[in-house]
Length: 228
Ligand code: DX5
Image 1 (cartoon, rainbow, N blue to C red):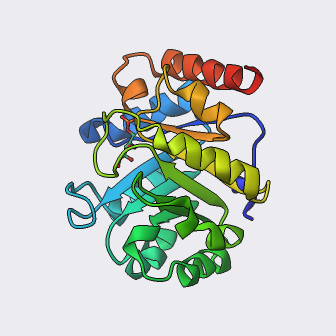
Image 2: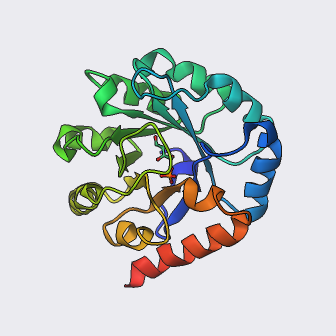
């Protein structure tokens, strides 16, 4: 597993920059660095797999020139295999894609492993955990969506908690369990108690002026979740 994907015991808040002002993306990335984030997630949407359109490789290439922070790319696109190498070349450190978007995810996971890039499989709320349990040894990360992929600002769906608990109880300890969608001060503790260690957050950070304060508050709530 690439060292930047080392499993962490302490929960990690991963900002998802979907809501940021792209006209100020350089300043936004600098603000996140100053706030002490460990990595940044980029939500790539094609308007087909999800009813929303965001951005592609060029933004990852541009951000790669701006920061040394690990860049996680969440592919919410059809035919992700067609673009894996392009995102690896753009500088992604970890690429996660939806199990619902490919008939057989295994070859894509193998390609990411061979490229020494972190690999993640993603499941939407309506997709059973059992649909990917046979793949978990081949990837570094399982992203359990607590909203239907496509938009930030949605309400947290607690169905994700049961999947996280079952994955935490059965998967290899090296697997990173991540949750994304509606993660905020009310839900982050439950996510950690259910086994999530990477917590993707968009609105609960970017709707605040002070990213550092928002991140610190969420990190503290996440760590409290470990001991509660
Ligand atoms: C959905 C996106 C969102 C985003 C997080 O496709 O992946 O989940 O990153 O947004 P919030 O934290 O606002 O739900």
